[in-house]
Image (cartoon, rainbow, N blue to C red; front, top):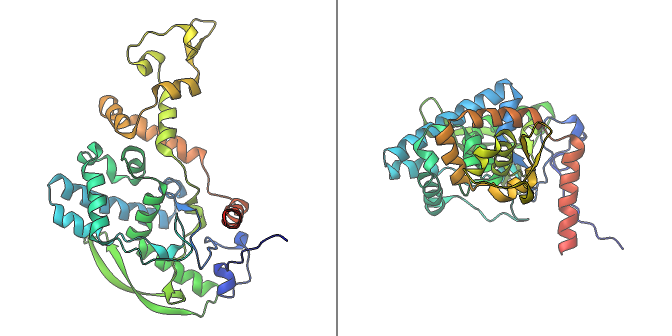
Length: 319
């Protein structure tokens, strides 16, 4: 007999008789996290009022954080980071079936401070764009970036949630006090918002057009650099024969890299990618971001449903 694991979605819990296709938000599971992530790349590609508010809020936050790091004002930077608790209210990311009150706390705030302050890129203006943090900072991936966007822009997503609850006639909402980042004053403030509540925990919904699966953008940037650079520049002065298998010679005798082979031989860790940007300027970053925005589109409703169901199936299998 096939095992089943029944987990309620938001729509089932709150009496919304609509499918994922009919919703603007991700129909999350109310009792566990799902492996989907808020993507700053898709936010940049969205070109709407909400994406503009998100981008300006993130930019102001990181400009403030990087300024404090550059001025060695650790205590003030830690205070800014303390509110980046893991946003369990969005029910996305690499979490557990049951939440464990993962407030960020001083220890995790200091860990994030160390990650950013030890990054060479933090001494520049590059990291004011959170997309570039994902490319250039060791220890920052899709999950971290998604959590940071959710926390820093909590106010924007909470307002979206309230609007969706009104639209879909969700009755089980309460006045909830949340910590929000005010990008005008560049400070954290307390705000009261009407939000849906399940088992004593409030829920914040995220627009599905901003959602992605986990992607390793630093690897894709490395591949992009190899694909768009000349062979001598990639090799850094090394002399290789055609017998190396790293490139093939065209009729006009130019050398064309075999991308997989070159990537295996010349790919760089994040720190080295930053060194390349310093040497050659930030145009490759800008061009890469445009390339990603053009290449990747939001997940389809079928992809969202498949990801959630596949995750549940894997939990059953691993049990």
